[in-house]
Length: 117
Image (cartoon, rainbow, N blue to C red; front, side, top):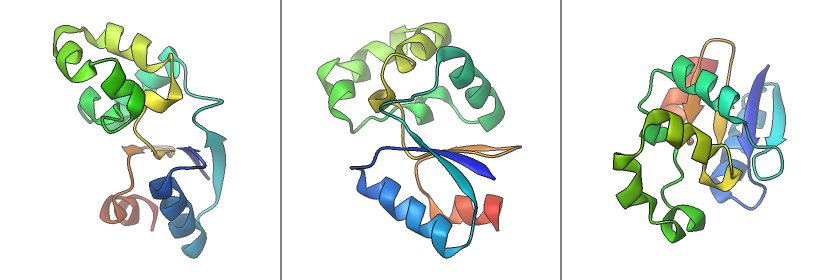
């Protein structure tokens, strides 16, 4: 079973959930807005993902743009970025898919197929 952090009004999240259902993948659905990962959880997911931290940011979201983060993030440390990410689930790239040995951000069907099927 995998964990998937989603936002119910996000069309990409709905598409990802349909993909999981279509492929009979069992999952635990977590509302990223109401129950977003804390700093320690994000640190663990980041370490397990093998991806750059910038892949964890929802760069198309309103909070990201309103906070001017495209300018601010390059000047911030990883710890500062993780702390900020943990303050608002809408800052986190979604869906966030967490398996036993992988973490994926966003819905890229080829990545999901490789990890889950």
